[in-house]
Image 1 (cartoon, rainbow, N blue to C red):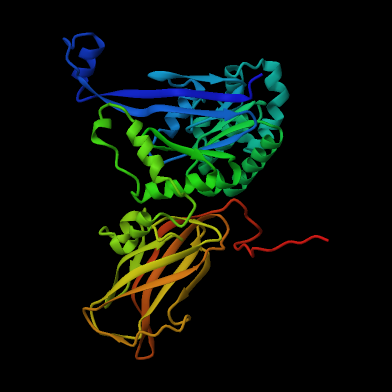
Image 2 (cartoon, rainbow, N blue to C red; image 1 turned 180 degrees about the horizontal axis):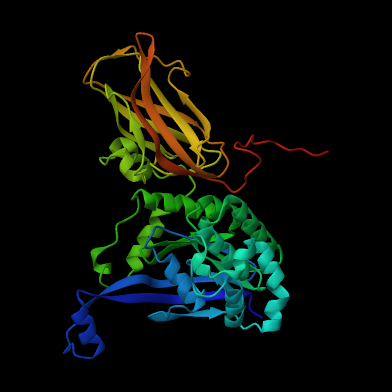
Length: 448
């Protein structure tokens, strides 16, 4: 008996991209006269992977890398252009919000609809109904049409159905990001139960902390190509390189077809030494040699709260990981640096440069400034620039945080804000072990 739950072999998915509706119609009716009226877009290119029974496998990659496409092919919602998928076990899948639900039906009716689609009889759904309702915990709304549900209520019911129909294989896309933190905690607790029961879980998420904590193995995709697979730590480190462009660009010949061997080989070659301090060539590619703006490596807050008299102005900023790479993903237990540059438009005496880290609820968790750290600038003249770098150990728990930075000071005894950027960017702390509260004390435990 095989120990493989899911076997994906050389799967390729190609979409035809037409310039206009007329070309699409001509091609569909066989009126192209031998001409190619479309361009080929490779959503996936020759992707292979095996998932063992009882294994939790994560799939990560940037938007457009093919994560959702491979899940839809595995669950049978899409057919591959070439290649094959073999499944051994009953699958329950929670993909994008709304998949498998009739918006006009009530919650109860959708429970029975989904159960029927999974091959259950009405009696079998009856046996599971109370567990589903208890897990979803949406009260009387279960008797209302799901088109009236909030996104949070919708995902509660969808996940409750998926998790309680006794699947052997559970497939989950990004849908959990819609639920509140309490519901997410309940879902992850269920994940742990599934793992202990020997269930197979295929998990796609941008939450790298969850990937690190729950996955046994991770597959990294980029532009439809499987870059590599390995431990969560190694794949997350390689993913961080892709995010800052430190992998080879997609060769032009692959945009419209051609072999992808060189692409995969070269990208895997770039992964050599993942998890170490980096090769000499990687170390040479530090921020000092980066011609792009520092902030261009990050997804910035479009609604940043910015104010100040601009006598001094923050002109660039970013976060560096332990290897000196610009990164919005910092591994717990490693050193990282918050760095930004200030241009002085007028003479300023004793400026104070600050940073604050908040949680997503807006609570200030920690921070520091040059005054606390006893770093004095004296008077900075108009036209000069100063760069500040705060380096420290990351001991926050895994999760999402917001960074605020500012240049302030005192003038005539009054506190002055020269330039402040509240919640300017989001960053993720990646952790495979969280303790209680905001901080990990990195306790050493002995038992005698």
